Length: 540
Ligand code: GLA
Image (tube, rainbow, N blue to C red):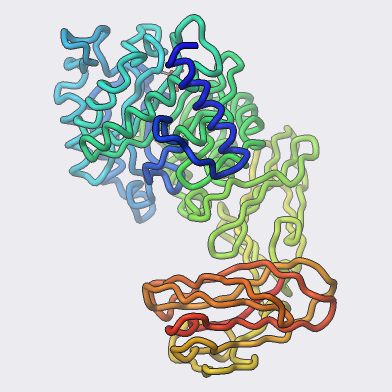
């Protein structure tokens, strides 16, 4: 076996092991096992020209789009202010052949300022620039521009020197003897080239894998460890059948998405082709519930007010960009009447009632089925109509054909499973109400010493494992860990890191086994700083 082949086999074996075991020690000679570049903590947002103008891209067009994103105010804010950041050039920016030094050469008649000049232009607006390349011998367009196979290091260094921020790496014209291992190796080679270029230049480049599962070669399990995002299907088209197909393919992939690594069901078609407004809203809603990258694919300067309004829906964008970074999972699918839900960082949940069928249907679920903790009632905020209503648990709507109802679900009223700290037993600490934002009549300020505690008596309907959520504030930058002990049993250490300010509240979570009936839960300070300010405990 050649050295190269051995290295590939080792790297594949290591990738597989990592998925199974999470933490595997890696020999220094092997490539890193994840793309740890700190980028894409939420799904990337921006623009890509392909769906709008394909190969007819040039500098003037890209500048026009950047100007629009930066300047045009839509319903009170610019697209940039709503989070759209990347301005990405797709295929067809290069000359048909490499230059005399073997480098990719910019087609200067299309891009007179070069890629570096365009990068400077968009950077001056606070935006970022993307380019496109290919992992084979030539790119995907019929004209086929030079691919980067065998040129990975030099090409990545050139992009970094041009100050490119995003690389979409396609999969056309692969070596004829392509295999799963060789595909992974080609994409891993570019990942490592981008990381090496970053070390040399300081330029971070988001890595967008466009392998698409071509020729039956799966994007899994390797893509989440190699790129910041990866296409999950072949190309999208601006028609309903294709959209529906892509959504169906992307839904079951939720397990792979996490901050820094996202499933990519391809770019937005809002404003293009034969999609109705209903279908466009479904694309935006479903991309949001699936934590997908939001790359606009229409010529914004020609888009209708209605299309710009869809792209500017900050409530839907907030679901997509939620910092918890969990892709929604499908809870039910009754002949194309689907329910998907995802948890959100502030304790709310998003739920999508998606009707892919051709007739209006009632689609239903419940607050408990989507994972909401128990509460007397819930608020359902419709993120398109912007109206809110209250429910004691049922979540149901009449959903037109091809439409999606997207709700943000939050608890209202005082939950029955909440126990205020100020009403509990307090040792070395005191109830106070100086800092705003607490529930009940205040919170407990622990004495700055070890050993202080708050002890709650809580009731469980049945014995078993449950979630304990402690709402707290820590206005310092130093963690204030505490021991959490149930019924006097062995303590579990829970961290209470700084929340930025004393009136800024956060939730720390642990699991515990409770008895049926009455139980005690004690939170004891274990450092000389004492505990954080504690607002309440919620059980279940
Ligand atoms: C492939 C990709 C598209 C686009 C074109 C460019 O088809 O999947 O998204 O980048 O190539 O040639």
